[in-house]
Image 1 (cartoon, rainbow, N blue to C red):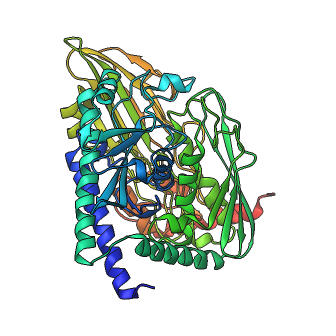
Image 2 (cartoon, rainbow, N blue to C red):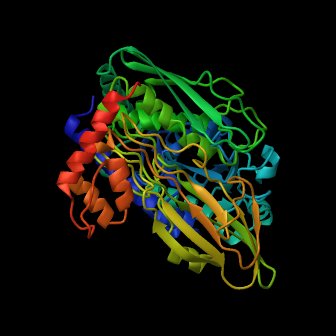
Length: 570
C-alpha cells in the first residue's frame, strides 16, 4: 500500500508527463486539426495495457476507445514481440475510435531492457483517401485506407513501405505523414520522462503504482454511484439522421455501486456513415455519466470498471462491419441527451439541457494549377443551459474541440471568410439561457474548384430545453442565400458561390419568465437576444431607447401570462 502523500506526488508527476507530451504533440503537428482544434487524446498505460492517466487536452470520445485500443495492440504484439524503438499503428474503427480518419499510435517504453509502460495517442488527420471524410458514404470501403495493426517503426527504423502506402493513398501526404511522426515523437518524449521518473524514485515497475491509482479511482467512482438511489431511469433522443429521423433510446440502471446502460430500442444501423461502433458509443456514454456522477476523479481504467454498456448488435450504436461509420461523431454526440434526460429524474441539479452539436467541416478541391487540396476544421454550437448558469456560447459539448481560428484556416487553405458571428436569438430561452450558435459565410479565394462535405445536424431536431426551458434554434446550410442543400451530402460549389453554415443554439433551463430582467437586458445589449424576443419569450419590456427595463410593463406582461396559463384548459 503506497503512502497517500507519495501517491499524490506520483499521480501529479504522471499527469504532468501526459499533459506536457500532449502539448508537444500539438506543437509538432502539421495540421490545424491537431495544433488548433486539439482533436487528439494522449495517455500513459501500464505494461498490461491499462490506462493510468490521460491528458486533459483531447476529446471525450477517445476516453474509452484509447483505453481499449492499447489492449488490442497487445493481443497482436505481446510483450515478447516488442523491442525498444518499436511503435505501433492502427485505425480499425471497431478496434479504436470509430472511424478511419483517426490514427492511433502506441509506443512501448523500455527501461533496462524491460517493458515498463506504453504511451499512446489518437489523432484526427487531414485525410485517409477514399471519397473523403463525409456523412454520405454507403460502405466502409469508400471511407479510405484502413491500416491493420502494424509496426510503423521497428527498433527505431521507419517502416518505409507502410509510409509509402499511406502517402500514396491520401490527398495531403505531407500533413498526414508529419502528424504520424509527431505522434511517435511525443510518445518518445513521454517515454524519456517516465524513465527519468522511475530513476528518481527508484521504481523497478509501474505496476504497484498502477494498481493503487486504478483501485482508488474505481473506489471513488463506486462511492459516487452509491449516492444515487437505485432504480432504472429511461431517456430518448432524436437526431436528424440522413433520410429519416433516428432514435437513441436508453435505460440507465443504478444498482448499488454499479451502472448498467442499455441502448435497446435504438434505431437499426443505416446505409450511410452515421453508424457508430461499440467502442465509440462507450466513450460518449462514459463521458456524460462521469461528468454527472464523479467529475473530479481522473479518467483511467479504474473509472471505467463500474459501468457496463450494452447496445444491440446492428443498431446505429453498435454497427456491424462493413457499415459506413465515417461521420460517427454526429451520432456519438446524441448519446448525452437521453442519458441526461434519464438521470434528470433523480439528480436534476447535475444535468444540462440539450446542446447544439458541433460540426466537422470538410472541404476539398483543386487549386488554380490543378493540384488537389483538402482541409478540415471544426465549428462549435451553443451548449445547453445548466441548473444554475447559462450555457456557454459556441462551445463544443460534448466534445472538447476548439473552433479553428479563421486566420489559420485562411493561411492554410484557399478558403476566405466573409463572416463568423454569434447568432442572435439562437440560444433557447429560460431562467438560464442556452448558449448561442454561430454563423459562418465562406467563399473560395482565388482560382480553382471546391466541394463541401457537410456533417451538420440539428437542422430538423433542435436542442430541447429542460424543466420549462425552450428549445434552441436549429442549424442551417445555405448556398448563395437561397438554396438549401441536404446537410449531409457532398456539395459541388461554383467558384463564386457563398456558403453559409449556421449552427444550432443550446436549450434553456427553467421557464424564461423566471429570468432576471436585468440579465435579459444585458443579453439584448450584447446581441445575444433581440428586444422582440425579450418581450415575447421572456416577458421583459424595454424602454423606448432599448437601454433600460420597463419594470412596470414587464411585471404586467408576466402577470398576464400567468393568468392566461391558469385559465388554459391544458
